[in-house]
Length: 348
Image: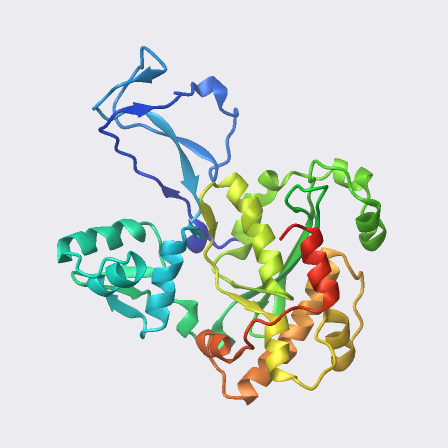
């Protein structure tokens, strides 16, 4: 299933008029059949460097990364601007943004406008006019929960010694109007040995992973599957941080722009009297079993069933939009000891 409107690639336009030092790849250095979401030749005017390092002031031919439309800059300044607008009715002046985000309390209007325009370039969440920056009116934040597509996901991961965690399996289900309409499941080769603890916990073996694709080989299909959907996970900070770290290896400086909800946070707010809010405890509370526990697709399916229950409870509390659900969910709290130890083990 395709969502081309949300994931059509955007071409990066580059203009360099100053001293630059960079290697110029030849076509033979690229893969014979590069993915349309990876690299593509962008021709401005013919240019042949005589040396690898050369001063130039003309436009040039270079290979530029093609960035999928559901990726955005991972800059904290962009997130600060988004948070500022979200807290102020979805709109703020350039001067206010320059003051709050760039700490420039007396920036001239022209400078503030240029800073803001450069900051949010190619980010479809924003619209800009002569004096203000605003959130896109079609942002999922403002839409009714019943009209939003959700992708409920789970990842299994591994870490070796002090290396950052790497994903070994990704599973997800797409929900529309309370019904599962599509699924995504794949093993991923982490290119590191699998510790015995993880192998015993998941049932995944080194032999299974040896023949699995690398994350870079499935990233395009994953981004296409996710599209514009709001991402949901049980302890979403863990799963989405891993996902965005892997995506950042493929598209340096970028992360997924999708909205997110955490079923742990929602459950803690909606069911405060439960002794525990891990996936097993919540499945037991709602009376369903988790098949294929500690496998990505099995846990994602259980989380999807849980999330549908939580959506019903949100509606009964008068929470009907994504923004309202965000405001309603519990403040971040320390996870239980088992979750804390797991995150520490993965170096997060």
